[in-house]
Length: 285
Image: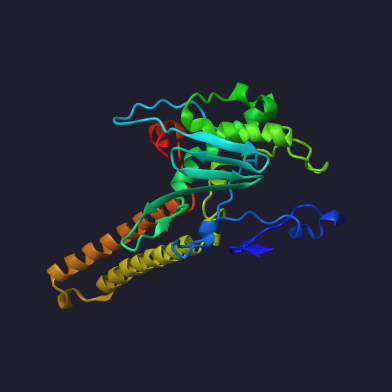
């Protein structure tokens, strides 16, 4: 069934679930039907498992820092609600909805989930990929022995683990189609690739990518044309000032195209993010 431009699938081919939509409705998010919200759609494939998302101990020592007070309420088989700092809810088994009821412009439009940048997602991506393997070694039901979650901002993670252990038995029923082994870790460039995991399927990012790539090509071509003009123009037909100006413009265009190529690769393909250098920032996200 299609709802809010999202295709929802019940992943079970057993005949008894053929008409499941008549008995169990898809998760409903009221804000997606509210005209006061904009609805940009995007997606990002993250290379780690469904139930392995955890955090590590972080030290907050930035000036003016404060803890994020989170508290899980109303935990049952359908999920839970997290309140106090922000608003979010987990709709079992696979929807996490976070929102902030704030004004963002003079028309009193409200903001739901923002378009997450690649840098924000990549900040914990490699860490989570590694943690998944650590938790697999120690066992999903003993996850607390591998992870130290001492702060109130870890409440949502702990709430999810409580739900997972209580209502899913600490594991997913793959109906015998999963052997329990994780695939080998790919190279960092592949693991943290942003183009094929997001940009290619995101309308806004794809448009920005194509626009910047076109500008990069234009700058490179312009530098070649300027050098070509200088090369074919007779020395007496061009003053030294004009020649110097064109050479300078050619160098600027070439340098700008190279800088833009690096910018595009870093922001739309791969950014060698080092989690250890960003720990202070992660405390705020």
